[in-house]
Length: 241
Length: 306
Image (tube, rainbow over all chains, first blue to last red; front, side, top):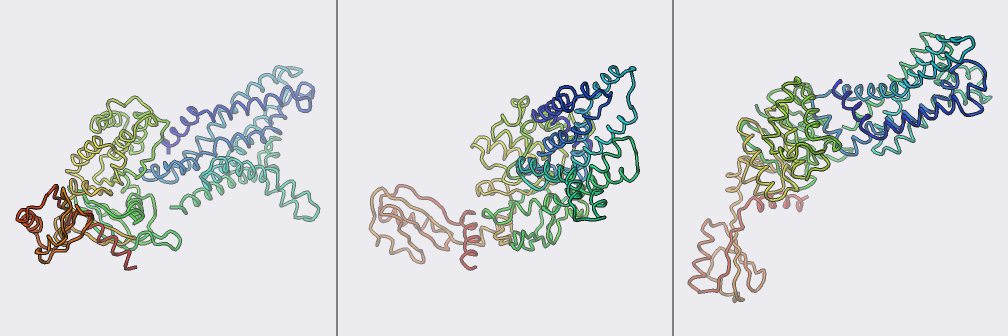
């Protein structure tokens, strides 16, 4: 597994797509945080990183779709999946190696946003007046969210040989699961079911964690959903052999 | 070490790509695995290397089953796939080191093994290039180096010489011949001269079924037809050959004829006739009884029947 992990991570660092995706993500987050009139914290007046964590997921969705789109699609198109399958690797090694490499890359993309924490910390009045544990929770939330998005992205990549199809599909599916259930739940036909429908979506759980409320149920949701999509990826890959 | 393929089948949807084939490859020999395009050669090899899962049947590499213990088999089998897929963005050495890592070689062993293979496969000149910059012949050598990385006891090579120029062809064949001494090699190819040059045994497969599984020498005996192609400098009368008994004459053009019969001495027969009649001989060539012909007979006649 480590062999695949190292290779995949190096691939990200050697390829343009990784850098482009990360820079676009960071630029986007920076603009939202500091510049855009509707969302920037300077006008908002509160010492908080909230904009990063409310709008961030939408950017993250594209970032993750971009870094996972080639994971299996490209290997299938160029035939290198045959290479991997005929080397002494377990399919699970390949899957988890790729998954962890993508997760690590997302972490790399998130590291620079810690600077915002430092800035806000300094800007607070009095200095240091911000909800540190809430922010820690939010970072955890973003990581769990990325995990689900990556699993979705890899699943979409396993479905097709075309990276673009994989990108569009995974961005859409991620969006649907992130916000779709919440939106559908607001349609006035569900009655009391709308509560459960809402719980199927990511947002419901993400908001809990973002507030700094660490509930086992929310963790179970994120880990379970990631697991489910990874399992579906595995089944998709194996069914084609 | 031997490879035993037992009642192996693969279905893609309703189409049977490989239908209950069984054969064995013995140690120290190169087994030629032949068949027309789409006969199921690659599919069989992909199952033997653990890429595809058989619909039924199994492949045993030294009594280890590929369906039961795929990792153990993969560790022991070197495979050069037909299109030789590789990460073209990698450097030669980087790619080989990655493969070495996959075979769980320690850092020191890995480096040493890569150097060895670069020497064996003649990659010295190109070792600092990226894979996508290499010509087909050199990529094929990298593929071969990859297949040899784990020092496997079984080598499965899917058309290893396709697309190579004549010089590369000879070199790659030489490498294969050299390494085959203590290994079991299964080699698929379309080129019959290659089979004659390298292999002792052949398995011919057509439409997913085995049509021949014999040493080359026996296979040649089995199809006893001899053919001789003769060209003349000037047109020759048709009745010149009437005296040849039990020989079929086929006129290709006024100056070109093909004679066929079951006689081993056909060529001499024809030559004698030509000298006695003082015909203007230009060239005479044995074409019959060749593997190409046998291949054609075995794979083509089947098609007509079905």
